[in-house]
Amino acid sequence: MLHYLSNLIKINIMKRIFLLLIIIIFAQILTAQPEARKYKFIAQIEKELKEQKLMPIRAAWEYSYIGEYWHTIEMDDLDIQVRQESYLEQENLSLEELKAFEQYKPESALHYIAQRAQNEQIIILNEAHPKPLHRVFAEQLLDSLYAAGFRYLGLEALQMSFSDTTRIIEMDTFLNKRGYPYSSPITGTYTCEPQFGNLIRTAIQKGFHVFGYEAMGFQRKQMSRDSAQALNVQRILLNNPKAKILLFCGYSHLLEQPQPCPKDNPDCKQLLWMAYHLKNLTGIDPFTINQDILTERLATSESPYFKIINADQPSVFINKNGKVFNGLENLDLYDILIYHPRTKYIKGRPDWLLRNGKFKYYQLNKSEITINCPCQVRAYDAHESEAATPIDMMEWRTKDEEKALVLPPGKYNIVIENIARELQRLKIEVK
Image (tube, rainbow, N blue to C red; front, side, top):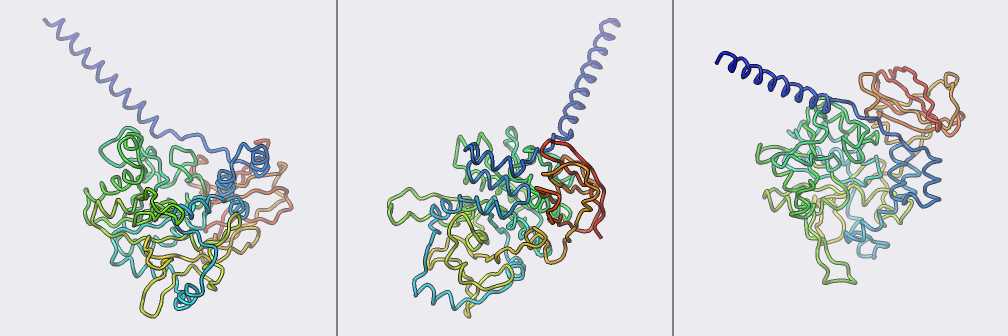
């Protein structure tokens, strides 16, 4: 009997040890740093485009990741398809439309949204995925939204768990605790782009809980992508009915109404987007903000409204009756349009990276660079891993280029890598 009990105790101890080992191994897997993304060089993108191994929209994404905004918008030909699908493509304005728009005057978009946010529970802000400008604007909203009680930032771009069917959870489980995204797909899609990384960092630092709401695999078998997205957002509200949420989505997912049929196909099946489903699920009318329509373009024609606007800051347009301009008359697909001024380039970088002076230009000492170029220059926060999404990055085709990093004050680890994947590391401080 004693021998039996002794063996039973040993078995239970072994089971507990085995379970503990499994937990330790699983924890190590979860907390292990993923391999950092290998960003493409300009020459590699050009070569793959020429060989038709890369579609223009994919090239636009790759250019955006390495800070090549001019090349990004030169390649971004998805805009035309998205705008046509959303009934938003317009080549010219009629005299009536022109006269109606002249009644609207520009006002600071940051100021207007800050005031409006006081009485809103859900704000949906869209982006064009290849345009980091839209992420910089979203980041600049965070202070005022936090002051208005917003505590959740939902990102379409974050990867979702494939196994958790009961609650919202990111595959990058420790994102909020760690405070910064990895450049790996483990964190998400597009989150390897520096300005997206900065949006996430800033949100977490300010006290937002960052979550993903993209449709999971099992959901896509049962419902549309957009209805699944809305359901995932609703789960936040089921746990906290008074939660104030900022959702950051791509393109047309902010449409509140069924998408109109094009004139040449009036009997089409109307698409229903995430904002529409969310409104019906929750009974909450979201404040929807489209910041893509009135943004500059190179690959496709610009909005005729964009061409006649003269404003020097991100702006909304309000008439004397207090109505905010939201596009075509009687087509209330979203609440407001934001105008972004045409980009100016200083030291080879877009002016909007400066965030009204909060970030600064930093010129590296070229005499310290010992490896041959073309070179990627990546700046990492000194307290973060090199698996993180960089704070900023750029490419020098030659060392003679005058491109500068654009960074907030702080200490940084600089990684310089050439096309042969040779590395050089420096430490800098931006004051």
